[in-house]
Amino acid sequence: MLAENKFSKYMLYAIGEIMLVVIGILIALQINNWNTNRKNSQFEQSILVDIELELSSNIERLKKVIDKHEQSHNATKEFIRIFEDSIKLSEATESIVNELFISMDYNETYDPTSGILESIISSGQINYLKNKELKYLLASIDDLTEDANESTKAIEAQRPFLLYPSITKSWIVEDEKIVGFSRKRILHDPQFRMATYALYYNFRQQGLKEEKELLETLNYIKSIIEQEKTQ
Image (cartoon, rainbow, N blue to C red):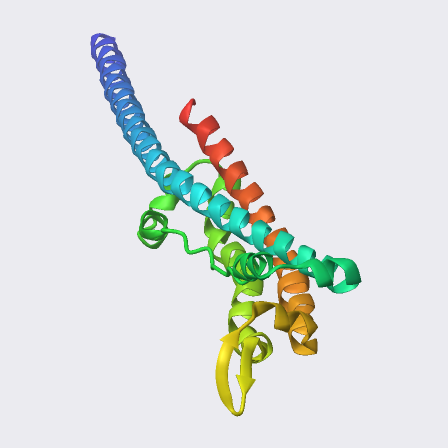
């Protein structure tokens, strides 16, 4: 009986020791997980700050491109009004036509800075972001940017063939010599009118639609980042 009592006490003692070890391990694991999660959260916050900084800069850049392209589209619509109104056509001055032409012909692709985002994606650091929607949107920015630039690139590619030949109609030639220059002369040129409709009305209108959709997406991404930074 004494032996049995000693063995029972030993077993209780051993079980107690094992439980203490297990509890200690669990506590250590919990502390380690807590520290890991805290470090990951801190790193995530750092990533969010960096992305937001780059994103804010790109949003302002895109706004400027959209503003210039809206001016281009407005100039195009004014040209079309002149084409369709004989009075406007006769009253258009050199300075007005020249100003409208310069504004209409403005064509700039949106070229965002992407070094920070590309580094975060290529290094796998994007996986530190807990918001799945945010990760998906960030990974899709390149494709959305490419779509937004399609119309601008189409104008860039086609205007040497559709627009620029009509500019030669501005030269006043006498006896095979250039004696003057009048921008108003292109108003009567069918090719100039075709280029105005095709490039700077249709293409520009579609491009502005896609640029504004991209701007809306970037602002939405920024709003998600701001929410994640407060958590």
